[in-house]
Length: 128
Image 1 (tube, rainbow, N blue to C red):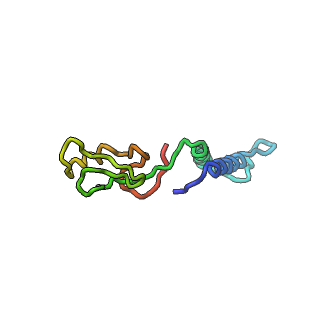
Image 2 (image 1 turned 135 degrees about the horizontal axis):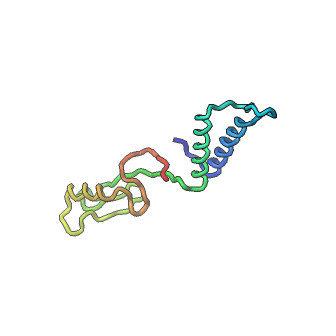
Image 3 (image 1 turned 135 degrees about the vertical axis):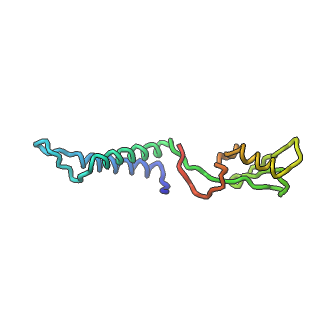
């Protein structure tokens, strides 16, 4: 996984598009004489890469933060987001239990406060 700023993504897109343009240069007689010879499939994949870089540059894709719900008081009454620290009452009308805590975790796949994906993974993804 590569992390890049919007400026870096824009620069990457420009470089990729330059490679594609150079590979498509034609000689005066119409024959393909690009400095870089790219098979048609590779050119298509480079166009896709440039397109994705442009989408990162304009903020269409965002970093996904992974987190997990913590048993705040160790009695299953309150869940805490391990990323932002926000607390949520798990079962306000029922006696706290592991079953209610697990049901809360199944229902809240994302933290309502910070948007962290509550799957317990540590890795970072890019999301549309």
